[in-house]
Length: 320
Image (tube, rainbow, N blue to C red):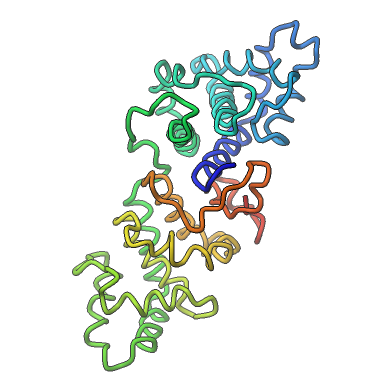
């Protein structure tokens, strides 16, 4: 049974393996020993392992793929996409306590520079996989967090969030004034304008007069200013690590499925902010942290990988 952080890591590793080109599968299959190939270890078996078993080696037949996976995961210069796919599968197998039982700590020792050179989404998934495996006790202890584990920089994530907040500036100001009352306008509006300008003078905290109106609006599903209020709160949270639990504790339980159902343009800044919190702070866990089997991941709301496939995701298709 795995909690949110481990399930998210597994899902991201599955996505890494699944988004590699077909040539990656062929590259791994080319390394299957003839004796194992004669017993059914082939491209079709690798595809089944990725798409239907989520990277978990579950049977003796699956173990016939292990040598090829280990070989591909140790030859980054020979085939970079096969290297990425094989690494993701082996890590996913360890996180899910599969039969592979490969000591991925040895791979970290030898191939750390190659992991850091992977494309952003693959790199972040692999590094988070190592971090999570160490936390679960299924990999040798991690040597320490790396900035490269982030898919996007804090500055880039925050810029998109502020742009989305500014786009809803009119609705947000009107909503805040309505929630707070005109008598508090002189106290609240200067800080709101400061936050929208990205200056944070003063920073927003749970004790700020502006906080309660913003949180009230962000938590309201049908309010015209819900989206700008949410992204403005997130713009602050990515700087503080959500230290007061605005998202992990207060908003996530009632709002995550609504955020996941937003269209691509509206949803991306929020989901990018949530992913940033997950990747940046190893202790960030949204509540309640329900523990389920990886086979039941669809029951738990997880964050989509914001790669090219995200644009094609329809409403409600990006859960688990």
